[in-house]
Image (cartoon, rainbow, N blue to C red; front, top):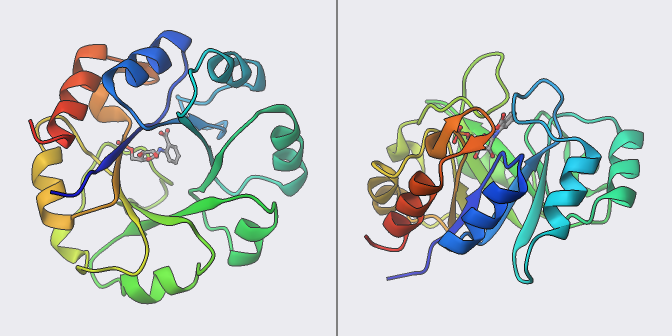
Length: 206
Ligand SMILES: O=C(O)c1ccccc1N[C@@H]1O[C@H](COP(=O)(O)O)[C@@H](O)[C@H]1O
């Protein structure tokens, strides 16, 4: 059985980052989107990243952020990977010379192969649920049968994942990694260490 990696997104506290890593998370996500209840400041992000042990990928999540703002942020915060979760173009995603993943919000009728092909330089494609007017972090799952098998890039499956449904999601999509935020929280931005452990246990086969 292939190893499936886990990213715990929307971390706002050092203790939640450390609990996620202790549970076996491969990556943590920091949300730099002011409208999100999980948004972190530069100082918060610096503090969280400074507390991490080696070999944990730090992912910054952005939604149509202004170029100057992201350039400044990258100078201040040591992020390993950029996650573009808005309507960014290929040129915008490539414009920082950093590895990135592009989020696509899935809805019935989408040609995911064609949409993925628009981002040939992405390290991976994150699939989240389409909800009109909301860029992500909705806590809602999409119909996993909409994802074609054998996609040409690593797929990071997101959207409404929980300890209860993640095993079924992995069986259906066979993603490279899974990404969760609301499904392992006690409240928005505050992670539940028991749920994080249960989630990663399920990702690893129970
Ligand atoms: O978490 C947020 O607040 C957020 C805001 C704007 C765009 C994306 C956001 N989060 C990402 O959405 C997916 C799905 O979240 P959930 O598990 O359904 O709560 C999550 O993996 C984050 O990467």
